[in-house]
Length: 575
Image (cartoon, rainbow, N blue to C red):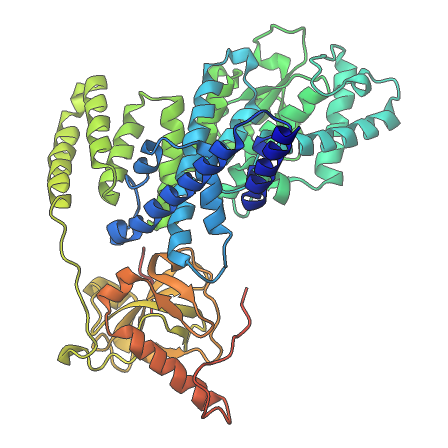
């Protein structure tokens, strides 16, 4: 009995300190709790030490790539690693911003590695056991690894919609066999009239009662491809809505098949005994068009040109996922060349090449992307070697990238000393503002924080002309500031267009932690790496804040600090 009490005490101590671990254990489970406690404590120290080291080593990297492999190489229990990263992320909101910034990126990476393992296991299953919904959830999870997306939660939401359809069916036909189908049953309704009743009830609930619709106005938004977002926003593109529609129909005993129709994904519903492949024996359902039923000829009207019978064939779950990921790939390629679009392109390429690892076109795109971003040079060489083996005709493109990747590897061995900008230097005397100050743009009205500056505009003449810099009073011949804007963009702003914010507020930008360690109510404190590049800015920022507060607050002559204010809430862009 004392031994059991001792174990319970150790269990309680572990769970009290790290409550998120409770789901991994049962209180009466036979376990060496002292060993578990020590392991979790040791993992916490190692993870924190590793995260703290990343900023110093990778501050100049635009995109982090090979910095995370070392976390995996530590060989620590996975759930302990994740728990410590979450512990860091959930600590004091305004402090340890740099630590949180890298902890979040590492968590993103580790979760993606696990999701890729799950996707590979999914693809190894027999085709008849693969669910399009499960595959779509894996795609969603990989692109949104920090969101709480699970197959169980998505299935539960679809079960709720299924029950609404059953309620509608019960009114129309109380003896309908679909009403007796329990969750997980593989029952199939054979009678065509009974199938038609299901489809009619499904259309009524999905499009009339719940108001689902195709997103015609923001078609290329990646959210349209993520199942949890489709359910949340009740809108999507043809393929995501088709996966939902097909899954709901299957839950009710009606088998629909996915059709990889060009430019507009469809479902087909056989009107003859199963086994027919005559395209005219099917009705085609447009889930994007509120479940409209089309003939084979009407499908051609939908896209405006004729197609061969092959395009009306049913496809496998793997092909559904390739089409879904291909859509995301195209959105990433259409992006603005910022970190968000690069991340989508990287994620969708990872997914596509996991499903179809020998696609030379996308292997080459992946190698070029990594080369452009300056990440994973050793992996780039592996990809290029694989391309050469698959298609020797790519020798020219491969040879060029190999040569320049080897040069990049050599360059990384001799890093360039970062430029240090001192305000006291004669050429910097016109610089009025400093890193960490919360600013307001006089013309555009946006709020931002300064994370860098130049004594004169350093952009190309083309950019200067496009942004109409010559129309400013001082043109390009004045200090310009790199700023993180509240809307998530990074901009390059002229000094004459900026002024200190009268009521400093937090800037909700994803890159804040890369440059700053803390929000202090009046300004952001630069982290060690930013301080090293702007060594005289910290005192200047403190002086500006103090002067601004004394000027704006009557009777504050004897106060040294401003009071707390309420919280609100890389591609350079124009002033």
